[in-house]
Every structure is written in structure tokens, then in C-alpha cells.
Image (cartoon, rainbow, N blue to C red):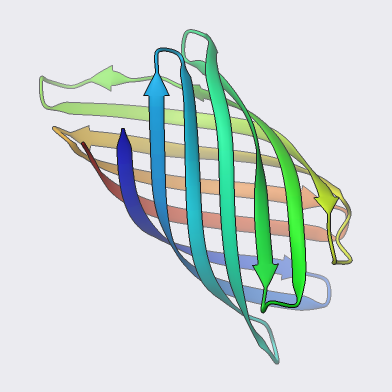
Length: 171
């Protein structure tokens, strides 16, 4: 079982708006063999040109290693914006991750992912379907891990860039 906490800073450029986002989250993952479940709870603040929006989010994903170093996962995201609007999104993702053992205490793993998303229920002007891709790097020292990721999402009239640093202690 893994439990962690983190911070995300995001920049989104839209034709009519630039958005800076700050989000804190807690993270949990449980794995049994090749199958896992993971979840995230988050709270954030997005700063638009003339308004600040608070966001509560929850995510649940189920995944399985489908071949060596390749994992498929499916799940959903729920977001609530200032208690006024909701967004429920279904997500599918494939990730390639290769672990390298440096020594008995240090493991490093570069990774890349590609996914699709579709809004199931929404209250926004964004297109319901999107594509995302990302790259990242994980490093583990004994039971302490650091994750550095960059994700890119594209929809019609929307491009999102998200970079995040996550630190966790593995129990």
C-alpha cells in the first residue's frame, strides 16, 4: 500500500483565458499482483483573469499490467467547482514504465503515457472528448519516492499543460 501527498501547479492557455491553478492532494494505491486500485482527493484554487474558482476533486482508477512494463488503466474523475457545477469524466490510459535498479537502495523509472477522456456529465463549454500524453520520472530511495511528471491535454479550442512533483512514503 502506498500513501502520499502532493502539490500541483498548472498553467492552461485557452483562446480567451489564461488560468493558473494550485492544487493540493492526497493519494493512495493498493496493488495485488498485476492488478491495482488507486485514488486521489484534491482541493485547489484556479486563478482566472478576473475570478478565483475553488475546486474539489476525487478520482478512482483500476489498472492491470497487460505486458512487461505496459499498464492499462480505466477510471473516472469527479470535479466540483465552487459548489455550482460538476464534471464527471471517464478516462482510459496506457503507460510504459521501465524500472532501473541503481543499487540495493535506489530505483529509477522513466515513463510515458497516452490516454483518452470523455466527459460523461458536464456543465462547461469544453468539447467532451480529449487526448492526453505525458512523460515522467520516478525515483525511489528505500521507502521514500519522488515523482516528477509533465502532462499535455488537448481538446477542440483547449490546450492544458500540467507539471507536478509528488513525494510519498511507501508503507
